[in-house]
Length: 225
Ligand SMILES: Nc1ncnc2c1ncn2[C@@H]1O[C@H](COP(=O)(O)OP(=O)(O)OP(=O)(O)O)[C@@H](O)[C@H]1O
Ligand SMILES: [Mg+2]
Image 1 (tube, protein in one colour):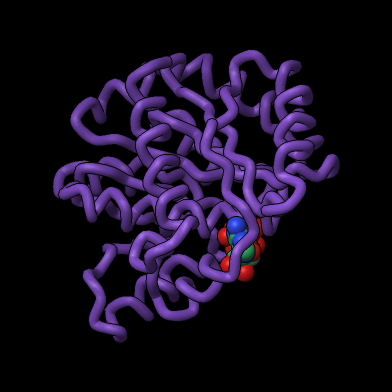
Image 2 (cartoon, protein in one colour):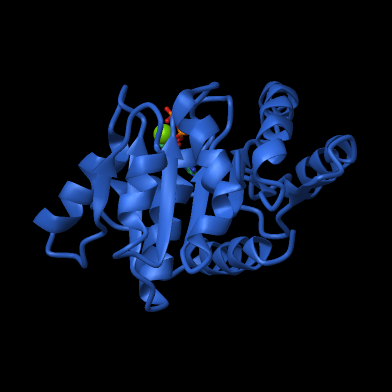
């Protein structure tokens, strides 16, 4: 099988995935889409979590709130044809997959430029990087250009230094996974934005600045593996 990412050279595809639930996958996917749109790109969000459809519901909220729409599509099973259809009319495709191993994540990884892995600094969330690494290694057989960037999320604003140091030490065992320099701290802005159909980049504050820096890191990761 040919490396699928090469077929989408003009389109950037980002899968936001982690085996654990509740670590911020959908939050990062939605905010990445908005920030890319603010930069003049034409993003599409693929909601590949049929159990929740959070991203699609949020995109509907945006339309109702009169905010610039983010096109959101439901994806289920093998996503290759979904991605192929979207690459005609969009600059970036962001896949939001459910926690755990899934066909959606596996097919997404074969086509993606970057796997974005939100995780908290808690040991049980970090431990789930091990099974994820096995899945990524299988994807590399088909898509060696896939870059992996781990994003520390929900870090305590007070004790962030220790959490970051511990996570960095843990990630030394994953030499092909890079840790984003931008750390997302716990803040009300994330859930507040979400309930209003917004992203944090549409609300001034620290979360906005962090998401903008993180977006730049994710975009540069796409060209660096
Ligand atoms: N940095 C943060 N600060 C505060 N709350 C956050 C932060 N990041 C995410 N959240 C909140 O945590 C909850 C879970 O986030 P999210 O739905 O993005 O996780 P997920 O990994 O997609 O979960 P699931 O596996 O259920 O799909 C949401 O209520 C979200 O608003
Ligand atoms: Mg989710």
